[in-house]
Amino acid sequence: MELSTNKWLEQVAQHHKEWVKIANLYKVDDYAEDIVQEVYIALYKYADADKIIDVKGNVRKGYVFFTIKSLCFQYLNKRNKVEKIGIDTLFNLSSSDNIDEHKAYNDICLMIDDEIDNWGWYDKKLFKLYRDTDFSMRDIAKETTISLISIFHSIKTYKTILKDKFQQDYDDYISNDYNNIY
Image 1 (cartoon, rainbow, N blue to C red):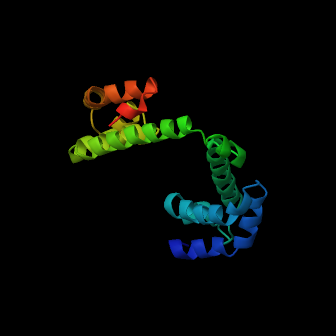
Image 2: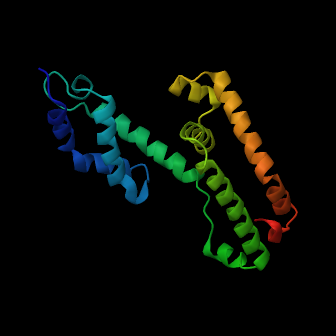
Image 3: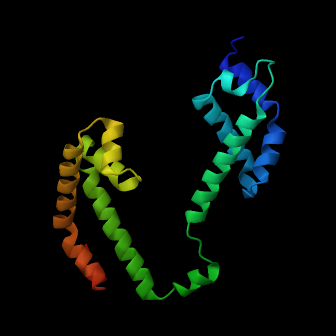
């Protein structure tokens, strides 16, 4: 019996409270409900009725359980990578040197972003994909079918452009000469 995606997802969703309880077992704070919603999306994208519904028409709870477990661990790993600072640390940042340093760093980042935004769409997309994701050049080559050597030379060129344009500002930042950054 072939079930439409909507039908088997509705069957899975009938156990919604149970899925939320399972997600809460992993200490995901107030995000259990959100994770269960992500589970539904993952099931919709990557699973089919044969994996979720057995021949008797019952939901295979083990499959859903492992999907919840996987997404909970993904969330916990990402949450643990976020650096958290206390409010007392923020008050210690009040010295003007730290504020000037942070402002200078932010200014350099904004100038680099403005430069990249003036590039052609291909160059901009490729560099931002390399800079803003965890993809290596090899990963980008696999995902985009652009040759690795082409990606390598393009990224090398982009880095050279940015270095030539912003090296003086970076040197001023390193030497704490924030007033010369423009």
